[in-house]
Every structure is written in C-alpha cells, then in structure tokens.
Length: 145
Image (cartoon, rainbow, N blue to C red; front, side, top):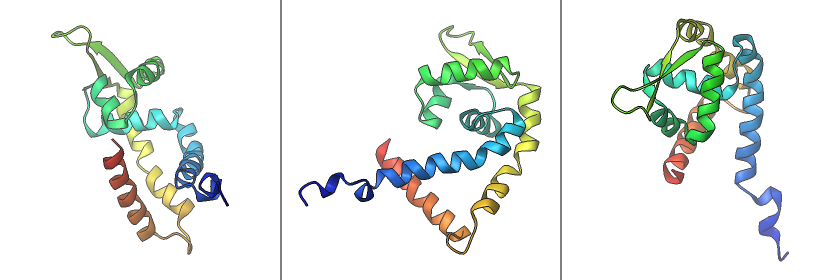
C-alpha cells in the first residue's frame, strides 16, 4: 500500500507515547497521596539527588523548557515543597531549594518505585525487561538530546 508508512501500527513513536501516558496514569494514585503531579515528582527527585539547583539546571536534567518549568515551580512553592530565590551573583538566575515539606515527602515517596514494579511485573514483562527497556530508552534519549 502506498501510505503504509503512515499507519499508526507502523510508527515506533506511538507505543512510546502511549506507554508513557499509561505508566504516568499508574503513578497517579501514589502521587495523589503526596499531593503532587508526575512532573512535580520528577522535580522533587532531581532535588532529592542534589538540593539547591538553578532552574536552568533542573530544566536541562528534565528536558523541559524553563517557561514550562517556572509555573510548575511556582505551584510547588505555593504548596510548600520548595523555595525559589534569586542568586546574589545574578538576579536573573533562580536557585530552587527543598523546604522541610519537600524533604519530608521523600520518605513517603521512597516506596513508589517498588509499587510501580509490583503493578507491572508479570509473566509478560519481567524485571529484566524493565532494565533492558530503560537501557534502550536511555540510549535513545542520548541520541535525541
């Protein structure tokens, strides 16, 4: 057929897109308990690894534009998870720091990865499959950046 390349079943991007949406949906009940969205969870994970980071560094790590990240950070600050402060060296640069609440929620979030694997692990998709898929997707991200 002349346009087989345009069939949805022939696209490599659709399974990635659909799986991403469905995985985020699986996260949602756990994140609802913490009062955060998936993207806010990603921001917190970046800050749990290393607190006090510039907005530009967080945006690079999460592959988000700063104009997408800034309103998200404002909402997180309003909820009490973090603070944003201008640097003394350059007032245009903002440093993001975890608040006590942001540090506290780390303990509650620490069980989420295991719960996610529990929800997905099956005879059709094993722990080894998770590791292989993550490795492949990580390689793809390096190429696409």
